Length: 235
Ligand code: ATP
Image (cartoon, rainbow, N blue to C red; front, side, top):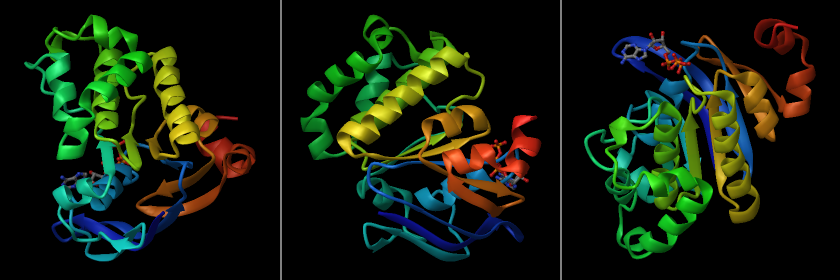
């Protein structure tokens, strides 16, 4: 469903991504792994239209999205939970969730999807009328994930969901992602520095180093890979 090929992108005259390529099927969870500064967020930006790639292709269900604007891409069903969450901190949790319904369809389904979101993250119902900025980091991440899901994604991109969060909260968030992939056939692109957690949740993964894809495999293959073990797992 998603096929990225030969993607090159950067900032000004500085190229950051070099010939990035990967695939993602319906209902699959694919991890993009790499350390701080490897280029993961730049890759997400290039896929979601926040940054125009200088060359390459982003095919989503047969439609070419490279160099389309972010609004057009959002309307194809690619919804991201950005790194750092980017909530409207002065607005309530409920108001933030309402922002996730961005078109006629998702506005019509809002109440039903809100009910689902509260089932995934019961804390959010308790906090519905509270300003999002007063929530803990973990709760804010739940709001960001719930807001994305209210947009009824066909492809959900999670950019560094574990950043600064307690391990049990990360597990809760990844559990929701796994359930969505399995039960609703939503594809999940999981961009992560926490390789142990990402490989535990993902079906397959790709390793990015210095803006290049250097390894790919099933989660089991990557967990057993000597380079991954040494460079990322400390074993
Ligand atoms: P992190 O986990 O820190 O987000 P990352 O793998 O997502 O790491 P990127 O944020 O994509 O990495 O950064 C890749 C490179 O691009 C880094 O060298 C970074 O300094 C550079 N970079 C990121 N954003 C910009 C920008 N707006 N302008 C110029 N250079 C940037």
